[in-house]
Image (cartoon, rainbow, N blue to C red; front, side, top):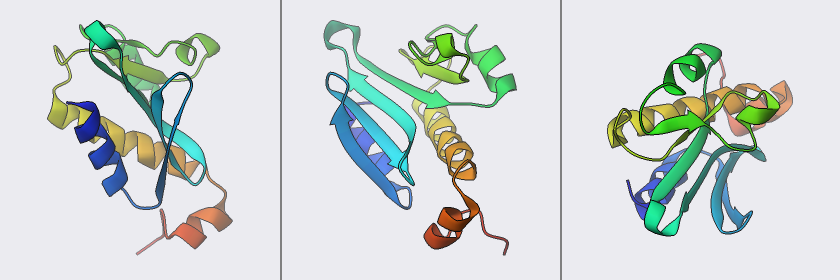
Length: 122
């Protein structure tokens, strides 16, 4: 996945906002809360960090091309950084980004979720 493909995918999710911060990282938010952080680290290539469930964290952190996200996992947060597609290909990455978006949106206030039309019963 390229930085452009990452940005286009995150932009396709409802009610997202984008900002470039933290030394050039492309940060995507839902309801003001971060769900994905991506950037092109020069010769190291594209890297993206995203929130995961505790079980997914335990599995992914041991997979080639993945690690606990620096500055987040070290603080006890369940965030993974994918730095190559060895174990997580682009299709799977999109699934993880969608799940990160969902997990973060569930942490928004019920009022904000309702205002944004997120996580509402059918």
